[in-house]
Image (cartoon, rainbow, N blue to C red; front, top):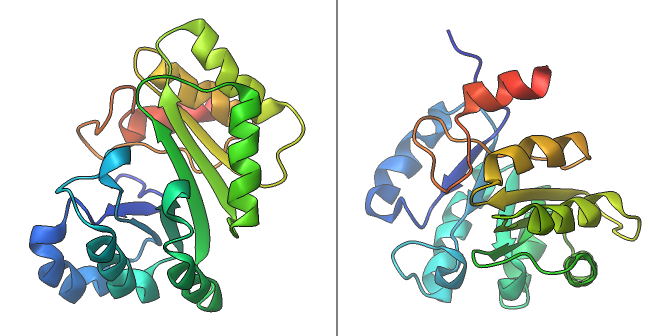
Length: 198
């Protein structure tokens, strides 16, 4: 039997047509979960409003080990993040850029803002189609000045190699797919796991 992942991410924005069934059956899932309902501006499905996303997250908060909210939404979700903290749910504040990779300085600034908003982990996923853009992510992860754990990954032509390289540089929470990749550069879990163990 294949080894299960350490965590499952539930993309509630993708699952809103089966939310009631999911709510009834989620207790059967033994693996801890990350819940997120992604902002449409950062790749979210079904064009959900802030209120709809908040309601989805609240419904599953008691079952979560982590909650992932975009940095841009942190202020609007402040009461939700406070509830997460009270329930010992760790808070991931995330930033996604599907067109480019900002400078390491810009990413450090975003990480500092995430920490100020109460993040336990700062997650960043950016476009890495060239060695130069990948180098920016590596510099961000390896240079001093970021005062909280970082989960960093590339999207695009160098996305797959970025996940191995950044994991070796200290990136936490390495994301993989169970079967079909959800974004360009994401590896199936069995391939990522075997590569990281080499």
